[in-house]
Image 1 (cartoon, rainbow, N blue to C red):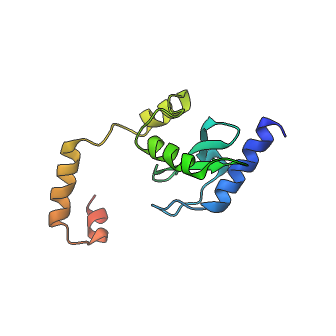
Image 2: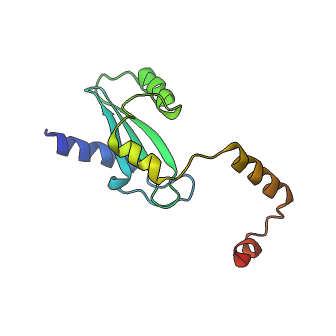
Image 3: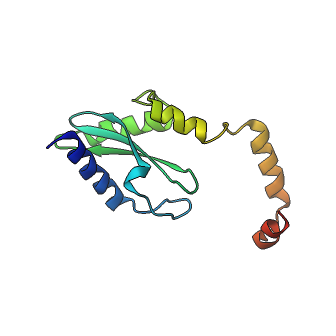
Length: 127
């Protein structure tokens, strides 16, 4: 099996397991999956939603792969560890997602939510 065929098959399996974004419920497509690390027994991937830009880290364990090792690798990946994250595609995705959330952003959101009454219709109508 060549590299392209196996990658398409792995991506299809991932899509069958997680059809929609857990944040905005948009459907994923194979183009939303970026392989960031590949070994004979485990593939690490990032699935990014095109709508809300939410990211999911996925480990595909193949053959005799160790599921515990995959969980550890996912934990490192989600904490920003260097498991194949230093690729041009990942750097470009991080830059296009915008600047990181700052402490001031968090404080502003906290203050907004403290006074927000839950009326989203009014909120979006006034914008």
